[in-house]
Every structure is written in C-alpha cells, then in structure tokens.
Image (tube, rainbow over all chains, first blue to last red; front, side):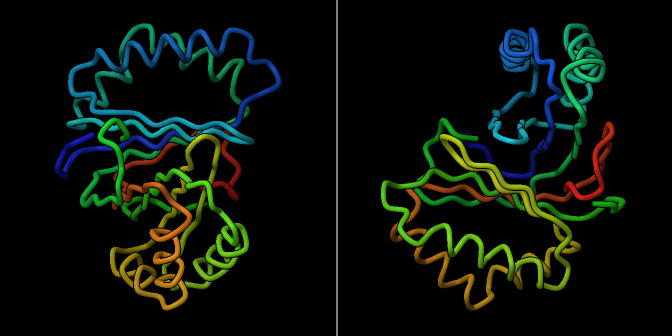
Length: 107
Length: 107
C-alpha cells in the first residue's frame, strides 16, 4: 500500500467457535467484495489461536458503507450466530506510518 | 481491555528473515517491558506467514516513550539487522470500539 496518512483502519480481532462450516468460502467472498468497495485501500489477515484482520480505508464513510453492504450484513449475522465465539472491532484513524523494506503489496 | 476511546494503537506488521536466533527470548522480554511502560493498555500478537502485533496505549507520548526505551532500541536495531525482512508500523487513534462477547483480557 502506498498511501500517506491520514486514512482509516479497522482492526478486527476474533476467536472462532468449533463450527466453522462454510466460513472459508464466505471469508474469501467477503475479501473479494471488500476489494470492490469504494475507498478500500488494503487488508492484512492472519489466523492462529485467534485471528486479526486489519483493513484500511480512505474514510469513515467507506467503512460505514462496507458495514452495511448486503452480503456483508449476512456474513456478520452468520458470524455472530455460528462462526465466532467472540470478536472485537476497533475503528482507527491512521495518523502516522513508516516502514522498513515493506513491499508495496502489503498493507 | 476495558477502555473507552479515544486511545491509541500501534499496528506492527512484519515478515521474519531466515535467521530468528534469539528472537523468541527478545520478544518475550519486550512484551514484559512493554507491559511495565506507563500508558500501556494491552497487546495482541499473531504470527503465521507474516506477523501482526497490535499494542494499545493511552497516548502518543506513551508510544514515543516506548519507542525510545533503551532495551527496545536494542531490539529494534537487532530486528532491522537480523530478524526481519521487512516491517511496517502504523500509529493510529482508536476512535470507536465495539465487540461481541469479547473477554476483557483481550485487547
């Protein structure tokens, strides 16, 4: 990513439940859709004992629009009902960014 | 964590090099020291093909103080010289936070 602050980040931290049937397909679909949203800048996602996904956006409006996107609303509901024991969302303004040798493809 | 925004987050994304001798011990020591810093609020860390560590702080001053802490300066230098192919740091103001069933011990 090659963007000068300020912009916005959503830090999504989560713990899967024991039932993750259908999760991978939905996660893939959500990533595809997020990338098509206006104002999407980039995304980094890792899962181990818990998961952290950080997505980057041009504005708070872009984040709000993605939260209300129809397929995403369905995914959120399924997440609460089935896939997640818990999750945590933080909406952040990125004020400063610096890096060491980071490839531009990385958020 | 049980803190109402605003507060601050540091998103540290990184890729290990092939030489991580001594990294685990240093990471453990840094976590212990960070927790002792004034203004430290919490930390979540995962590593898979890349690593994401998010630490939370009361203020930008608290973040600046941690960046300049002596043992941490040594660790940063060793990180650039040896342990990391690349890393990326974003300093963020957490403006809004919400969660679903998240335990208070989680950032």
